[in-house]
Image 1 (spheres, one colour):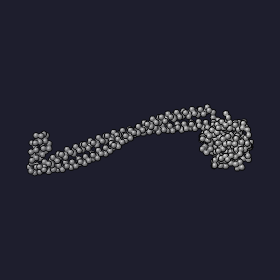
Image 2 (tube, one colour):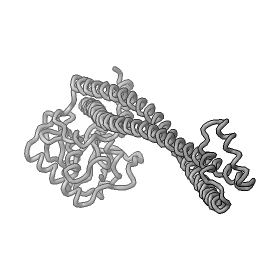
Image 3 (cartoon, helix red, strand yellow):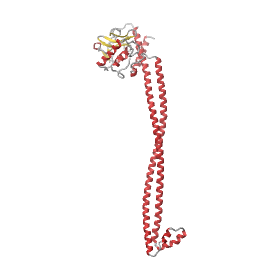
Length: 406
């Protein structure tokens, strides 16, 4: 591959890295320094399995939700029928009360007729008539018998005859009205009870299905969370591998690139306008880096502790141990840390600031990063051959013209 093509490939990897978010918390101290393709494939297989489980759960939830919607429609229809029955019962109750009121009025008429007949009987007695004749009329058992006995009514006069007819009519009307009212109300009570039972059954079925749907939703949410975690693990491994490969490629190029300056000229490089650290955080980060160097921890590409480190892995782990964590602080490579820190002139460097090295003076080709220790010295994870060391900031060629404050 030509140098230009290799340069473009490295730049493309940096662009991908700039788009990537920082790594998840559980990946902060990876057990495996540079993930292999087999590890990424295994993570992808786990992700696919979680996706299949989530898809199956979604199908079950969709089916259960459809059933719930159907039961909801049935429940709503039963509720509507129940409400209609209640209205009809209210009407029937009103009609029964009206019939009862009418019966009361007709009963009053019956009572009045009884009083009239009582007077008729008294008058008949006073006039020498026989009241048993009136009883005979009232209990006539046949047409001819009635005709024979009606002749006795002539003795009572026209007014008495009218009173008797009103009495008989009132009795018939009162009895019929009350019977109809009672029948209507009883029928409506039965109908209301029936739709109430149907409503209760529908509501219970709907409630039971809602419980099932809620349970399936809970399962789906859990699987969705597991899928997201599996996907994040796979993406994290892929990004970590890309970053390690990129930094490794830049370091290998730097090792064979002639004509590098001790310090590159300032070309107007910029970075963050603000910082995220305090003096206490920087002091803690320096102490952590010092401890790793003095413990003679090994250098491994892509490692970020706690047992091994590469250059950017040491920087990441030091500041994470000092209290910076995602989303304000993440695992990047040396080039990305350059643009993610505030530019600081060498004359203003403080312990904890970062130093950067590029094989051609460009940001994208920065291949090494260290932690400034003060007095021109630094803590660094140098290389596989040298390991983690305490060294002079000018001991490596290609120093960028400014430091970076986290």
